[in-house]
Length: 464
Image 1 (cartoon, rainbow, N blue to C red):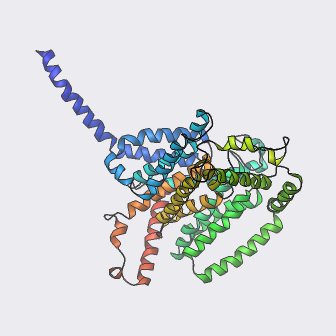
Image 2: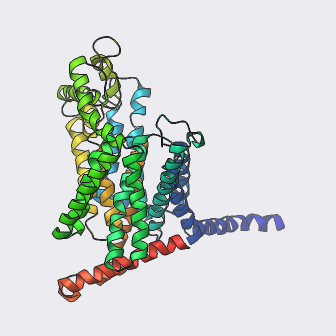
Image 3: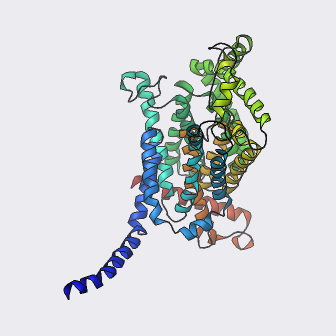
């Protein structure tokens, strides 16, 4: 009788424990774990490729049980979510018409696969208040890297990893420059907000951090891509957030600062001088300089695209095409073989033709349009997309590990914060706009107060 009773109660007990598991995985503690893993991803990104990869896998495992899949599927209808999924779908289908071995075709999906996390990040950060933690973690991690960069510049023996460049503790100078440029410009928004609210001590602290990044790039090491794209990011900020008189004043001050940096930084002068010198060496001797190789890769990529303009040559086909097009003895620019033509649009167009290029441009555009508001999350998201678009003129940064994950995490976290704020039950949305919200001046004042309040919450989290 006891055995029969236990058998009857077993399904009930199992159902009870399943209900408890279901409740636990939707609990605040589990969601906090997801947020902390995202913080660790952002903090590890400037330092370690392996750590970031492991943390991303753990994040996927932990976040999956918390998802309301019916709601998630509905969220996929949002263009910001749909385009990354469509991009990955095209990469998977592209394996069907590629000519290379299947191992190469499947490996070609890997650079695009990271985009699939954007919808999950957008979904998750609509239901949590901790999006600012991730932004702070990345800034703090980059600040520590900047301090270590100065240390290892004078004491190279303290480098935690072997790198080819002085003042670069880990990874490479291109990744480091991308991080420092993003952080330096991103801090412009909270600096201006604190200055307008007369919170001068906080503004001074952030100015010091931002200048630390800039000075490091000027006097330690900087990539030429960062030199080209950083003024564009600053121009975007000025046009969006400053009055014309302020823009003129800043331009004058910036011109003086650039002149002083040029006069006092041999590294900056030598980096800039290589632009023309590299081109002349490539043009006259066909030698593989940085500028020359890019021109060679772009010229050949345009020819590959012209051979298959609609659907391209298929996923993972780039290296094979360059192998077939290699000319002359080893050591010449025309004989170089690569799987990355150092231009994101050409990289996509060679593999997936005009269809792939259209999807790429549409995704960038829709992610730009996602960040149309005037707060910290909108500014960070906009800056991440702008930086990726313009640096991708000279590199395939969306497909590169480091810069690609900067894009995925930045758009996913900031985008989730923005979408949360736009929900009808959001406090921000409830403030409304239009006649009931008062005059334009009153709205401007209220927006400034809201921005300061938001930043106080962010930096309050740091103090805690």
